[in-house]
Amino acid sequence: MELEERLNEVRGRIRKACLAAGRAPDAVTLVAVSKTFDAEAIRPAIFAGQRVFGENRVQEAQAKWPGLRAETPDLELRLIGPLQSNKAAEAVALFDVIETVDREKIAKAIAAEIQRQGRCPRLFVQVNTGLEAQKAGIAPADAASFVTLCRSLGLDVEGLMCIPPVEENPGPHFALLAKLAKQSGVERLSMGMSGDFETAVAFGATSVRVGSAIFGSR
Ligand SMILES: *Cc1c(COP(=O)(O)O)cnc(C)c1O
Image (cartoon, rainbow, N blue to C red; front, side, top):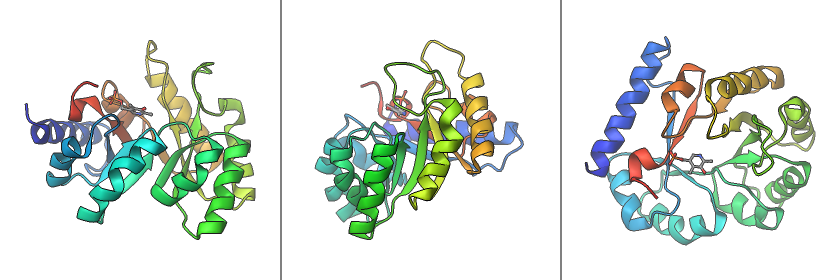
């Protein structure tokens, strides 16, 4: 299958999942995760009308997106991987959305860069719903107070993001994220990947992050 066919299939499955959940067919934003793929491989997705992309590493994104953006100015680029505070300046300069705010140090670094650069990416807080040691994210019990802390720093958090443990049924993790978003007073939910995005849509995802189902295996 060509990339455009795979992209259209994913779009169709998202629309179907929305309708099955009683949601508007366009209620969910598809974030095409292009990590490890070069500009050559990404261009067909842009030609096929895809505009929102996710990358998990600042440096890798810096290498390919300024050029792609020069060709297509209305792209939206999202950081979906862990952010080190020494990369906060680059991240604030490059990304339209940072989905992985997960500790005070990085929240403060982002707030300082927003002040300095006068550029304000939209922000999500990452929650470690499975409390996995190797995974980034704030503990579920601390999510609401962390969102409050971010707001006190002047950060406008618009949603929560999670990556459920690979070996577990993702449904309860998506339900937990939705509950925490309500408690935290945020509207958006970034959840669901190639293997589980329809489940995420059923649990209220407002954006899904889909890589391999569009670009092929990495
Ligand atoms: C790689 C990645 C994805 C996409 O995963 P696929 O299984 O290829 O769809 C989604 N979210 C994050 C945070 C990722 O790092």
